[in-house]
Length: 372
Ligand code: ADP
Ligand code: MG
Image 1 (cartoon, rainbow, N blue to C red):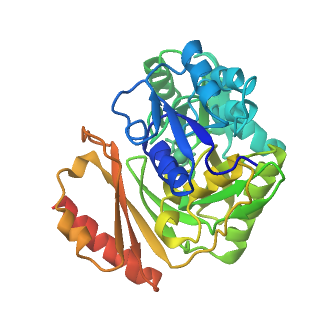
Image 2 (cartoon, rainbow, N blue to C red; image 1 turned 120 degrees about the vertical axis):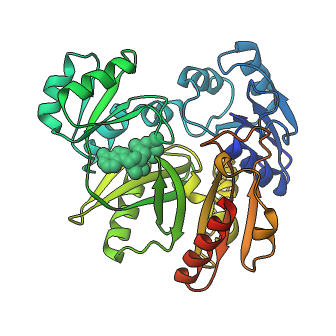
């Protein structure tokens, strides 16, 4: 076990790294962040900030020398850098797992190999693959870059082969997947924490509403029949065990109009849809990340109160904070980002109420007032 007083390293300095650092400090650990951005949200509050590129060997050496264990807050960190660190210090989740989660083709193939269905898809390595891919998948479809996509970026809804070809050309020849555009009733996600002894704590699924490809709000408990919730939890545990996963894992699922549960993607880290755990669960997803990478038991993941988490993007800046701060049951979280660009995640608020429908109504009312 890596005990309090030790130093934890994080690759990436975004808001997920920031909330990880806060959780680590609360538990008596020190933190060091590696991120090239001098004003990164996590770098500014960590005990140490190595401002260098993720492939900078000297910087990776410094991180490994100063830390007892290393984790990541985003999946697009080069897997080779994680592998390099692993020769010196424990790294969770492992480079092999991150390599799968950072590539849509690999993650869908991995899920299907475990008997977990994804939407019909085909890999596209060059423009000439599109014709056959579209025969497998059909239209309408979504063309997604296989790597580096997030918040709906690098995705195109296409209705015919011509549109698919145009979209693929605009992606400058990257590896991609063409997948069937499903008719969705709901989207849910399951979060769990697992340590190297295989001890697991999982959270009740969150019901996620996206706007413009970006998460708008998460509702917990999800308004979904128990049978589908249980299936989603079972599948997430199955994936974690098959990956021999150590860390916090989030898996996104679709529920189709005809009631099927479909794997969408996984994130090898805490997830935006798990931000509600900071106020509504016994143990937050960030404390879980600290615990499991340090080989401590994962914490109690029970829900203490129904909750709605609402994202605040740069679009709605500069908000009137008193709207949120004067409302009972509401908790505000800000990431300390200086530039409020449209679509950029600046913070979130959690609305707690013993009745989830009240929480939904309050969240909607507050969000409207912020936007107005
Ligand atoms: P990201 O990495 O940007 O989160 P996702 O693959 O999760 O990418 O897609 C973002 C959102 O786009 C999803 O949450 C969902 O709302 C919508 N979406 C993605 N793929 C499909 C699909 N095959 N069918 C219908 N909607 C989809
Ligand atoms: Mg997603």
